[in-house]
Amino acid sequence: VPVIVLSNNDGCAVARSDEAKALGIKMGEPLHLIQDKVEAHGIRVFSSNYTLYGDMSRRVMTTLEALSPRVDVYSIDEAFLDLTGINRVVPFEDFGRQVKDTVYQNVGLSVCVGIAPTRTLAKLANYAAKKYPATGGVVDLTDAIRQRRLMERVPVGEVWGVGRRITAPLERLGSTTALQLAEADP
Image (cartoon, rainbow, N blue to C red; front, top):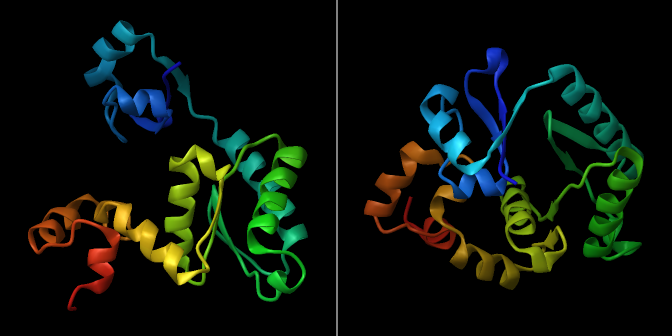
């Protein structure tokens, strides 16, 4: 079922299920401009609940802090964990599954886990964990060959920090994938 969540005062779509995205609902799109799609496709529309989001975020972050000695909370729904030394005890992918399972068990939320040596690569790994169901929601990009294989497939616009405005000029310069951007002459 396609689902969207609206911003304060129910003005714009601020969260969309994959089904809603497939129908062309864009982030930040005003409800009054998509009302016809909502009715035609039976899109479920919900108001945002920031108190609930904050509480769920706190529970997730508390769970993550119990699993890693250093957690950098990046946003309400993202955090970076320092995994230094973890692979001496358990393989990174197994640890990622443990994180995913523990968050689900403690909070009831399904999360994806991306593991890599840099934050940008970790975000890329998380993108793959969400996009490719075969990963089971966990992607380990600590291996350079796996990094390269994924970067060959990922559109440049999916690279953390690139965004819509920068994508078109990068593509005109020949960087249509993350790998082409990584290998581009600065």
